[in-house]
Image 1: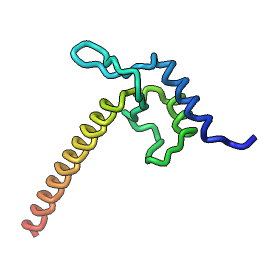
Image 2: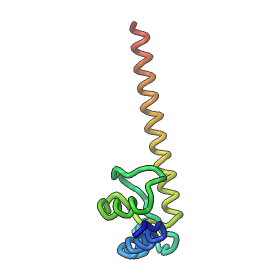
Image 3: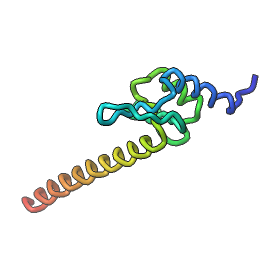
Image 4: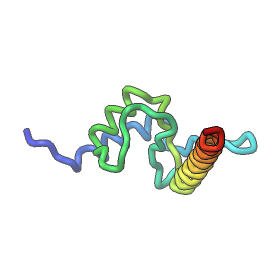
Length: 110
């Protein structure tokens, strides 16, 4: 039987159902009440990366590494991604400034 891409949204829907069909983000001691537009956010590295992961590979990765994903509404997923990339950029800038200052010291001492 040929692979049908349209079958995978149903499998991801089963995973959403297993997680209670609700955003898993908590704030102020309460869970987000959103039950629509739920997406699996990649919160820890699992070996699967890039936008072209494909739904079948994502499904199996979520099943194999459930701790690496969190079910989020679109709002919280976008917020998480913005904060993640902002923090990553800051870390990169700090690393770059440390590296450049260290290399300056080496140049000065030569």
